[in-house]
Length: 181
Ligand code: ZN
Image (cartoon, rainbow, N blue to C red; front, side):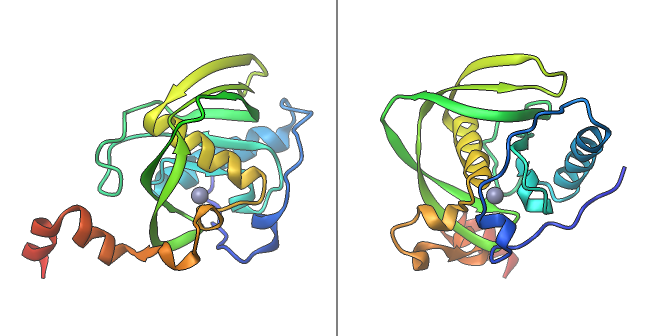
């Protein structure tokens, strides 16, 4: 098990379209899954996509858990999502705060569908179809965007709509920040 370096926006692999995975059972993919799980756990992220560690492959991990950055996140065992697709959306979007391990120190309100139907393969190659809502739907859309070369910054009307993490803390929890300063 090793943790991998998380690439930052500007690296070409983060703006590339990733390739479908055809050989889920390969040693390379099995190792990548292990390494992504440990990397996202160490970074305390709620998801990580293969391009973020330099692998242009259609694979991501969702590992929602409450944290300082996402206090309302549901607790979920890490899920491996391979060759994902959104098959249907409810056409209704809402704004929610997002950050990204590849866009360090920035947060923004990003519009996402509130309900999506998805299909994907798990690490055993088993097909799943699921309906995701709320925060989990948000993570799925954020991570799927990475596989299509899109970070949350590209989802904003204006790049300057992204704010520094410190400003964000002041907005979501002014009292808490006041006691720290
Ligand atoms: Zn991200």
